[in-house]
Length: 131
Picture 1 (cartoon, rainbow, N blue to C red):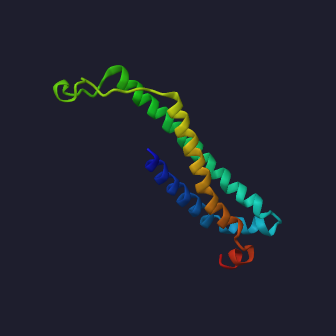
Picture 2: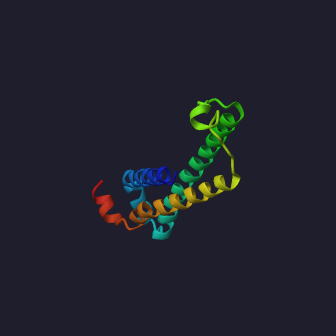
Picture 3: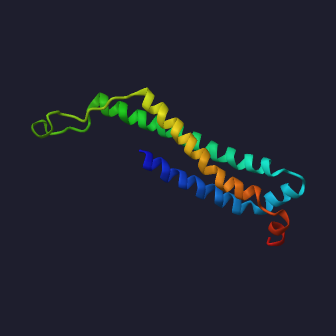
């Protein structure tokens, strides 16, 4: 599960980095108008957090629904003579959902810092010259 979250964090880094590259001109104009590095950094960190929170909420909803259906209707049957049980045992633990949610949001936050720093350090003159 942690591996999936780490892979998703690389997707967040890639997405925000592509957004920074795509919005170079806009960032340069905002910086030339007087926006601070901190403001630019906060914009991209908030974007990363938004992506992480929305993805985590939808992921939790889907995971809970799948666990509920599998627990209630026992859709996956196991041969009892081999596994000593007739279906996959599923236990829904709210603390685990909370822990995964917190870890996912923290990892997403950390992942969004790198591209946000790149956007904040961008030289407005160079960015506008290259456009």
